[in-house]
Image (cartoon, rainbow, N blue to C red; front, side, top):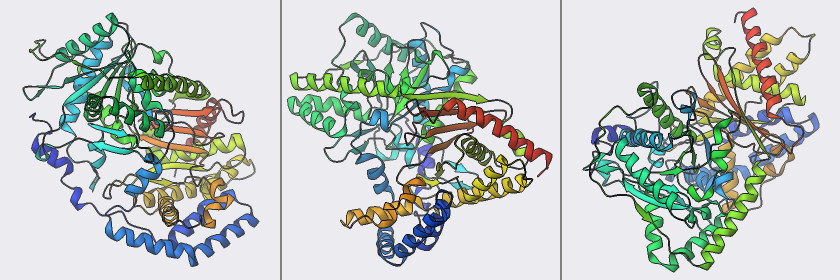
Length: 605
């Protein structure tokens, strides 16, 4: 077997798992008082009084009982949320995953060493695949944030992982193993023109070189160009989940060999999609990775590496097994490697003798053919709806992290407040907002919700809109402090959204009526139940960025990355909503950034 995840390094990656603290359950009192504070900006005096009443009743009655049951659950599980989160957020959903759950985006390499160029697709795919395989072999030694040890479990989910549809609920199959756990699958699957091929990424226990990968890819491409298109069975992965589960059962019943093929796809390291389109002709069109040709993407796979015909690349990934930062880490690693080598392979061109890729041919009957055709139809219909999705990606280049830190302010908070102010300028009211907080310092921790639209932020926005006030700077500082405090608490798993979800799910599991707290109009107006107007996330301080659709029809998706000299933002909105426009939000964001820097400078903080 390979030197894959060479013992010591792999053990280093996962060595701290056992010492990570369990995910704590906050006190009911603190969660409810934080909840009340968070909904304040969205309620009139009268409404707030009614909501406070509902909360008090909940705290003294049903909430108290549910909280006790949650504490019992937390005694027996190191992470009381983990299974629930997977089920509620991902596996129980019956919506088609590819457009509703997956995340996608272009690779950052097109900005420097790999601009679009004809005839480079296979060459670049082989180098990109090689670097991806190096990352698999490295999975970086345990991750620490400063002195904090972080949970590495999600990194196991990037390779050899696939979601499998079920009639009521999906499951995640993970075949990844470190050296001490046993052999890890080492094959990749290549998809081209509705057909699937597989080859081993190792030869004599070593990762094959880019020239060797190129030979394998060329073989696939030449066969696909010379022969008819395949059945495109992967189109079924774009279906509503129960439909896909039933079609999959039928596929296995026709011929047991079909199950072997499914297992080969599921356990593969990742998918390489050879796509004949050229999507990134413009910087503001990023929807292609998400929508693209369904016959060459396996929507349930945790990583599809897509190579377009002009040599640009992207990816689409199932969100269930891991959060975006895992992919960001890998793309950042590959980006650094490509920069260092100018995107070229500088090693030996020798090609060892190894088996050619093997085609994986499903046995298909009329029922499956008709399922595939219907799936294509439905997929194309839903893709035409995504044309309703406006996605722009712009860079704010006036300043970045360096200038903000020089004024002793937190760059992420700075961007978040600028976003709040720009929303307020356009809509003349506060926008309920979600920001992702990472809870990976706890065992199998993933995320908590941080709600940036605080009363302090709203007071500051109002002050900024009123030429008569001169308390802008003081109000801004208060908003900064509040945001920083809430974000720090959320990262310590002391937010309230996941706690409330836990209480809601216990009530649901026990067949109780939904507690009044969750039926209160203020609950959803302030963003509860996935109704946030602004869905935002800092994707990191790297060159990697993706896009996300808005949570609600009148909302925005706002993902951004922060560099020393710029902030790059991808904003999405629905074209069919006439109240929202991504470009207008970006323009207001730019002016808000300048106003804030001016405030921070004139009154040196």
